[in-house]
Image (tube, rainbow, N blue to C red):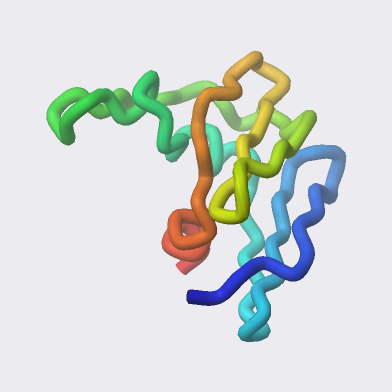
Length: 95
């Protein structure tokens, strides 16, 4: 497993950039992170419960909080803050 060495938010909260120790760089838009949130609010408790989130084209990241050594919690300017984004999940979204 690789670990992030740097996590930054650029372009006025619109882009999250994660640099991993193996050299991979994940650049993810705030919109993609918001609509693909791993939270139960978005994902539900089974694949059939997943919600399609729309209207987040202008959402921005306002805060990032570390969760142990395995994930981050992203706070968006629309108030959403319940998704925990693991390092593996961020890499999956970027690929």
